Length: 304
Image 1 (tube, rainbow, N blue to C red):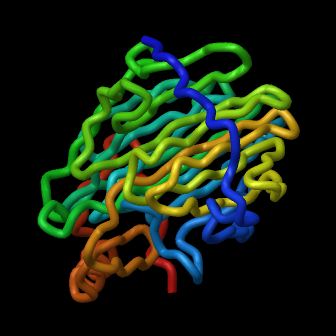
Image 2: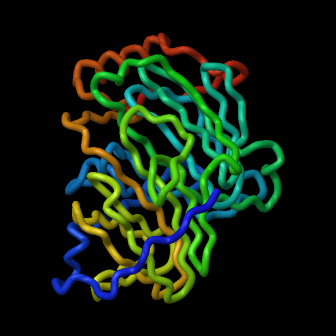
Image 3: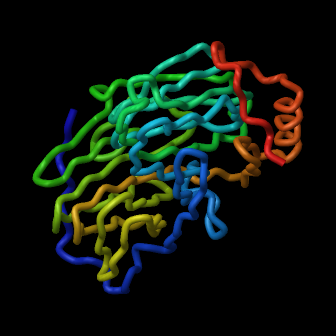
């Protein structure tokens, strides 16, 4: 599927950097075989729309005995999505799903009242030079939907709407924008897309969501006379179309949606609008009361 680009305005706002209200710099986190860059949650901004967790994985290359081996661990109160630019990850969960995700595909896992899953390099990606790069994100569920039954949905790459026109390529992963709608099922208005811009290409980020963020995975952007580099999460001004220009070939993630009314508490892999629910989840994991991943007896203990 494809759609036409919106017209580019002749000028940008007079006020320097007016379209960007906040710039977040990710913190580095070690998850074992490799390091991730965590842009959300941040001290100055917990969420952008419903997005409460946003990690850049890689780019890295596994070799020898190194591989991705995230043992079974629990979640509540969120939906998760891993979007790959390169490499493969094998997903297994307590609902019985066992699927390998590849670039352009979507595994949308809704934890709701509780789910357990593991994320590992498949056998085909072990003991070889295996590249891996992408984004892992969590979307908080609306308060009234936090305790829904766990669910899992897989979408092939050809189900995701794409634009490929004149040096600009976009994949609309979640939500409605640019005259198209992604088939990915969500519990609240959510926007998520990958944008690729060739050198000196301009594009307008339309006012299509209450909150919008733009993460620069690689390359460099100019917005209203300001330059932003890879590893920056830009919070865009509400109610404004924002023109961007790639001063280097750029790979970007556009994210956002409606603001959730209540703040969220986050401990480890647990997210909830209620502190007591977090405590319950901690006790349930300690007490082995979460469902298990069939065929994977390992697990990650509750952190101290």
